[in-house]
Image 1: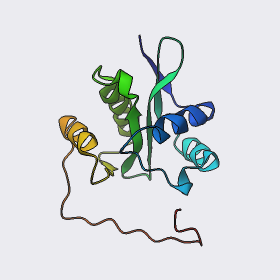
Image 2 (image 1 turned 90 degrees about the horizontal axis):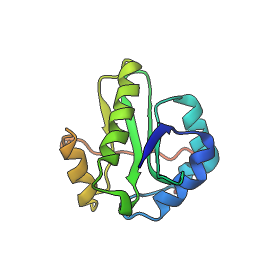
Image 3 (image 1 turned 30 degrees about the vertical axis):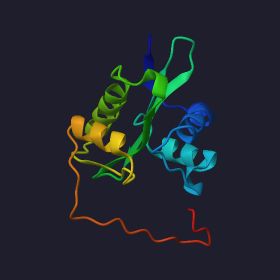
Length: 145
């Protein structure tokens, strides 16, 4: 049995543990506990966790918006819990929360070598945008920001 609820700041350590243990998830220094807590406070009710029968975190979806576009980051399900609709349920909850905020489009990034992730996003209605290039500008001294 899996239950879902909004992500809380207390979930950050377990989320980081899950993300760090999965191929296809790329964490940066910007994914520090303090930065993730700021993101959750800025986007209340948009991110969700899936909890297993004993309360352990088995899935997480980090979502937010800028007022016009929604963004998904590090949507992940523990490998032992995949194939049960948990990823889709997490996405649906994020999409519903963003829709309630007036957001009509969600953007996300998938690492180029994450074939399973890209296949998942295509199954839930995503389309690859090959006409765009990601450009990053580091504002400080940390190249891993």
